Length: 383
Ligand SMILES: Cc1cc2nc3c(=O)[nH]c(=O)nc-3n(C[C@H](O)[C@H](O)[C@H](O)COP(=O)(O)OP(=O)(O)OC[C@H]3O[C@@H](n4cnc5c(N)ncnc54)[C@H](O)[C@@H]3O)c2cc1C
Image (cartoon, rainbow, N blue to C red; front, side, top):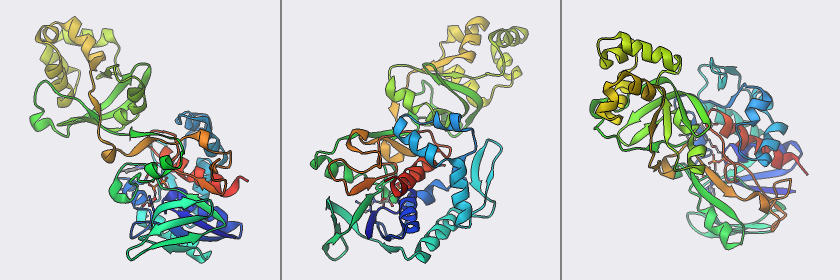
């Protein structure tokens, strides 16, 4: 039985791996010149493959039951074991994030997986862009011609819509819509936020607010925020993207001294000779002091009581998320209403979908790769 897989990202690789283990003949196709470009990009600055936290905490990171179901079936432990199976050892960092052991580069992880696939006789065809499909065939645009290839089973793992240069250009969205397949609008996720500072950042571009707590509405995240000339970046910003998309009128609030309560902050300000000295005494960073000076009225800044409130809750009106192409991932994708429990399309039962092209969202930190790979596992195993 011939299985054709379009895409060569982590979701595709796992779906193909499972079909191969069951004795199917598997062929991968991708329009880039080489496999899994985004998987390699994700490895820049630390290849965070999954996270070691408990199952209930882990599942709470996802926004819909369907993807939670796949992550429950193929969880963080299963991914660690899979990596070991293809020859990649991992370790848990101090924050619980799982990385390949020191010295193992992202390309080593990819090469280990691809060489295992090739040993199982999987084939790879690059520079093949899927431009159409029907129940049993795919039309590819190659460098020289348009070809139609027939398969017994088709898997599409085309990714989301960020970092289009890696191949995930979301061109499939229009194709799917033309076939009356519902697609929830793709939007930036795990993206920076645009905010216009009242005073130019000048030399503070790139400064980091460390150990702060950000919030939008009831949703909070402890971590770091980087100041940029367009606004904010950093994990404590990315984790709030979903809250922002759901409530774009709510402000982003930052607790600049979460280790202290309101009374401690006020006492420190009052014990100093003036408020600027008080901020230094409580060891606020240059970036935090800049924000307080730039984003509060002078009258508020000069009064210890009102400044203390701002230190504990500085609220700023965010304009928008950064553009989709800059985002780490995209929310939205093929609607779950279009899919059966084995992730096959109701309109094309012979075609299964997996990965970021489905309508789910999660913060960065290993949760994206885990879900993409888990959905590939579900495609390859649920009948
Ligand atoms: C900068 C950055 C950092 C990241 N860091 C992390 C992290 O630390 N932890 C984490 O968990 N996740 C991270 N991610 C996210 C993670 O890389 C993605 O969620 C994951 O790669 C999605 O896998 P996928 O297989 O669904 O899609 P993709 O990896 O996007 O693969 C889709 C594939 O389909 C191919 N394709 C698309 N359309 C066509 C077509 N028409 N014809 C043929 N081929 C096509 C593409 O070329 C591509 O190879 C990061 C992403 C970025 C951009």
